[in-house]
Image (cartoon, rainbow, N blue to C red):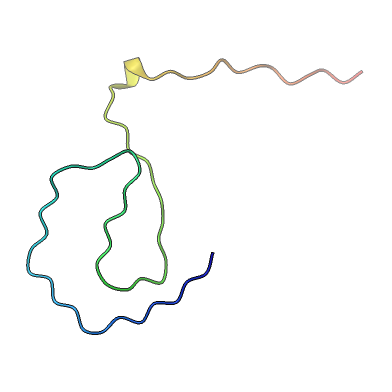
Length: 59
């Protein structure tokens, strides 16, 4: 999707964030690039990782 937005002057004094959902973006003003990342607050011992399988042997 391509979208063109032309903003006029914007002044922001304070932003108060009361909560964040699983998928959130808070953007004020223009940006050329948005990078996504993930953050988990669970301790490592509670992480669920799939078992890895060995690659198949060549015949």
